[in-house]
Amino acid sequence: MTPTTGKVDANGATLYYEAAGGDEPLVLVHAGIADGRMWDAQMDAFSRQYRVIRHDMRGFGRSPMVDGPYSHHADLRALLDALGIERAAFVGCSMGGATVIDFALENPGRAEALVLAGSAVGGFEFDEEPPEEWDELVAADGAGDLERVSELEVRMWVDGPRRGPEAVDPAVRDFVREMNLIALQNEAMQLGEEVDLQPPAATRLSQIQVPTLVLVGDEDRPRPLATADLLERELPDARKMVIPGTAHLPNMERPEGFNRLVLDFLKAES
Image 1 (cartoon, rainbow, N blue to C red):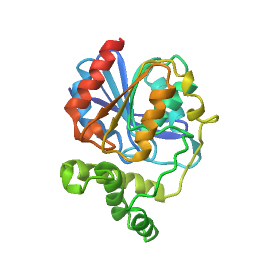
Image 2: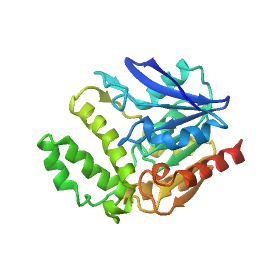
Image 3: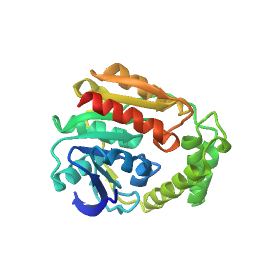
Image 4: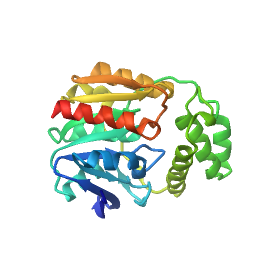
């Protein structure tokens, strides 16, 4: 199904979005090492049953970064308001998961169900040893070698701490490296100031009363694995599932299995 595309004004930024499908809204929110294109393998599958919306957050993909304070959850609300969407189900990955959680907290009643994959949570404190790529990443960043930074971040997040690059589809690695490089180039412009939600989400998870599916890859880093445990424990209506053979982007590594889990969950909760 060919999506419609457009741009909306959101708190001083211009957000690119795509929409496809029928009536019930399903919003896909991307990870911080990607952009809306990370959902390519979900758009067709989900739009057969839902009105699927994906967008590039400011500073990612086709949504330029602009100066001034912002929050991704407020931008998400502006996008949905512009599209006339009052309530929706949400799928968020990594930083996109944190954005969805913040949105649900700040906009009670507008989330019908949540799927959180490898999610972050604002304000969650977790002690973790630096990844083995860290020193090289810092040096590459200091030298302005953003292509090397992007490759190292792909190793950290797409490969995961226990696998080598050969364990992951080269097309997936290359695509994430390309998407992440755009985000790194925008970050290097040093525009904008992200404003964190206060009080942070980690202290307020019990307020989210909607059905939630927590997904995490068994090859992901320790922090997302711990975050998944936190979400399962603190959210009132959550269940957790571990996706084998995947790291931080299970929807790209195992799209058919990911799609089935999400659609089965949404059907059961509808």
